[in-house]
Image (cartoon, rainbow, N blue to C red; front, side, top):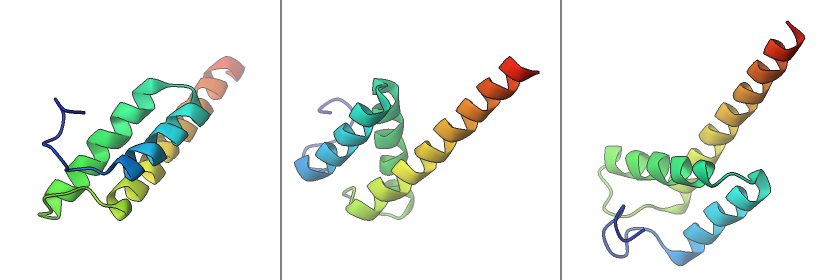
Length: 79
């Protein structure tokens, strides 16, 4: 985190939310994607800190992508 964000840009509470989602998914790459997306959402909005809405938006977006990837994998296995 210290290399990706400036100090105090994202709270420990929000990191815990991301960690929980990563634990559920079992893939650390999802955490990196969520953090990147949340940071970009905050930056685009002109914020200096990532807030809960940014993390929630990123989690939803990345969850949708994960579902689409699984559907694609299943389609390839069937087809």
